[in-house]
Image (tube, one colour):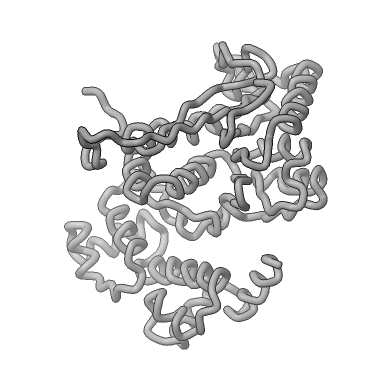
Length: 354
């Protein structure tokens, strides 16, 4: 059976639809981290299938025709770096690794750096020359370091893999490097943190261009149980307790995350899981590592933190919109997670944004 992003329910009909085509140039640096390419481009492939208003034409470009990947699989027939880009083109700069895993059971090898250094310099010079104000720049993981070397992140808010944030700040001292973020978007400049967050970033960008139903269909195909936002930290409470494969518990977690304002009872959640109340409590503790009440409150506090950083809502409204019965209940749950007071968290967010 052929499987892929389905076309059902996407609103495709026989009428003529004006299609917007976007040219996407994926830059492959030496020792490219393969998942930095496969993850975001898979989002684009699925987007082409589940909707027709926006279509993505992907080009793989590099300083050399063949690029060694992080897992030892060479990527052949890459196109040369073009001398100019079409208007409104996208440039996706993938990250790289220091050590490549070679095939045939051989140990990891640190490859010669001379040729790689020359190719990186060629990419940096190309980025500096061809990226224009109307070019969408998308940096996945350590791809931000190449963009920074080209001066493209100067004065911008950005992020990268948590292990490379200090290096990014050193390369681009005028940039505002935000640590512990999944991705940062500022105008047409987008940067993501480590590896899989490239999928989250591309889902976010595609969602801005298409519709929530498109992103939902892609996320289902990619088995992403929860879309994360750029405001979520790299070590996100939304992902805590998700590293299991029990489908019933994931259904419960999905239901809670989708409606944090609901007064969830154990019986209601047990019906979603199709188990008894007592069995759900045992399964939840076993697979998630915390009680249901603890899990619900952690998500509510995470949502409250997002509201505090992005809005000027009064504490009463923050508590109400995150499912707490009162400000007192909200503060009690908050202090189980954070040392500083909620208002102090809002002050810090305001300071960062200015």
